[in-house]
View 1 (cartoon, rainbow, N blue to C red):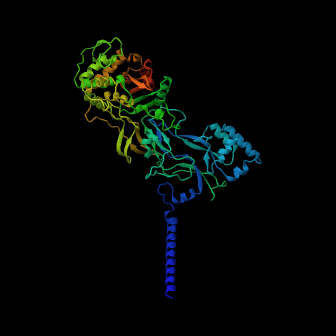
View 2: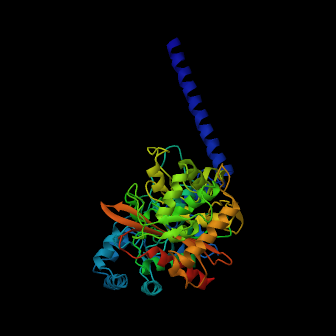
View 3: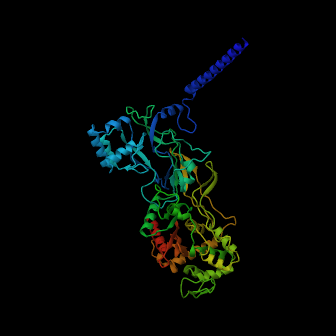
Length: 607
């Protein structure tokens, strides 16, 4: 009897527990239905009511919602609305409507294939390959974009299950020298991190993130809050319900996508890309800075890259040579001359003798029989190695290193800021290299190494960005300014999200004197009037600068790096330009000087 009562109590307790659980679940469901149904879901930009509908839909992405880029004047650098063909699969369409007992539809498909320059069987195969809406790719990995004529002709056909929709194309369909912009790539999800949105509808293409350039450094800001999709309602077994028309779903947040305003002038950028192409440059870089503030107006790297087809394992094309160190050759003599003037190891009118050979360390002058008697200004203008070897003997290695640091070399100079916009550090130049003066293996008392360094050989490395910024530094009395690529980021509705103000990039040791800066600028004018830059005397602007030729080994063969860096016009400087032509034949004419002249002539005509 007691045993029966115990079982009854247990059953009663179990029933009471189950009743309580069901009551809690009912209350929770009621709470969700009445109080939370219109709340935005965490990690999404949709309410619970909207998400319940989306779970019954299948869609294709028209726009990822990623932020876009403009140039200095608001001209778009990314993001163009194009047209793409979307397939909406349906069981009845594929199994009956496309068969021979529907000759009219079959004829329309043949017409469609002709419009798309494809075959009918290929078209059908791609239509049937997925059970969700998807773009026509023509067998590739990205949507094939249609021209206006194709769009109109497809619309006239009126084929059920096929629609043409606007799709946001991020990049222009051509190779470019804008490696500073970067590219997108499918990235594996990092454990413990989540984006600002999740895929709401099954996507045929994975969401991509920045893999290089500004696309990577600004990734947390560019992600956006969700894609724009075109979707179709599906049945319980996943089949599209043809009776219900497609609908477009877009995020409701009016602040996004963000707009990044760069400092680039798109017209100058394109013109210089064209000039590097027509001049035959294979490898190298051109940098144009605004002398007023060191903002980058153009930055071209060769070889060009295609941001839509990048192999991350091979950086020869997508790597930005404008921020990679290269042997500087005689442009480094600007640093050596500055060190000599700052440390008082040479007088202005002191005479040097060059007879073509130095007699030590295998050093000789580029002029076979020498320059004869010349002072430091003349030695600078003629880029005489013998003069600078003698100056290097009077300097300490540490003095060369300190002067380089004062001038913004052997360290990164590009704009960056810590603890901004929720990021530990924000950089404008992805993977900017610092350059160097010497390696740790070289002792400071090694006279031969110091002399080689003083003429821009041995272990010295300078980036084209640093070289162009060196001109701006001298024009600003020796104060180093941090070049920018971005000036501000705006919301989609026009409001400012983030300003990136100008700031200096000083050395801890201070700066060179204004007197030294002015002296070097004057000597660069002499380079064009009487020295190695005389071919620039007939430029549209009066320009000044310094040439350089560095001997390097490339793939086991002797090659030259050619440089010319300068500014113009002399009377009212507007642009500082650095040109680097890499790995050319030692017998080649000085392409860098010629290209510098063409760049300056374009800037003069466009100004």
